[in-house]
Length: 330
Image (cartoon, rainbow, N blue to C red; front, side, top):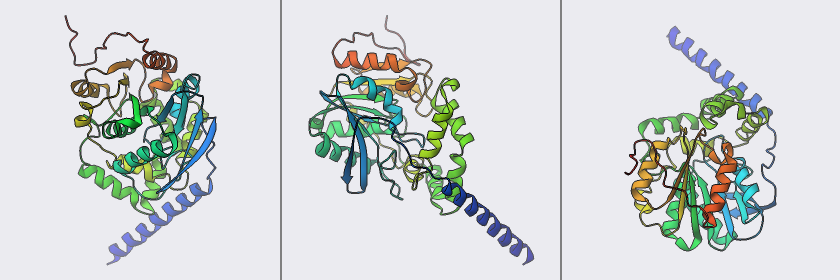
């Protein structure tokens, strides 16, 4: 009986300590500044207000960032700034990211697919070039196949949906989701995962190939964005597998010209996954960017933007790329 009492006392003290840490971190809250310039806009959607910025004139292009806890419109800024010289570029803050509302619920792949379809219908209002990263690329492919009139071309960066994040969530993902949803322990676990040292390690070892690219301002922005009210829920949807979507069956039916770009040293979605896309969509334009990981459009922005512009304008005549596990034709 005494042992049980001691365990309860220790457990209560641990929970109290976690709650105190959570409260102090919450008190350090700072508003998140915008990461791109241009004309701001707010789209009142069914689950919250979704913010976006638009710049330039011409054919519409919509930029969709990834779903990692470090993600946000800042990862599309090089494309946004450069391509706005020739296109009307819109950078969307997904629900739960950037300056958009962050409702305290897990989202699903279906929710984000519907958000994208409604945003294109109500805000863009004409066929658009979609540049999308990670799971957002899978959502764009599904939409392009089901509603081809909304999408003119696809540019997919480190896409998932064939060999990665294509299956139903595993027991591990479900358990992880349950842990992070706990009111005190879950918040504490998320605060540990998003402390400055953890964010810096993730940026230096998983996001960027060159650790020297990670600046104090980048770490600070990552900390601020991951400590907004409700910040844990959107990344939790990603971690728990609720954004998994199998698009193998969609790829073979795509009508839109497609370019697929990959970071040669990517870890979240390793480049070996490109073989799955080539099985179902061999006619796409493929390009790997060496010495880049999750954000090739940031780490090698000059080459990425030049390739993108040339491909869109029909000036790209690059040879088919050979990737790990493939044999060059004789």
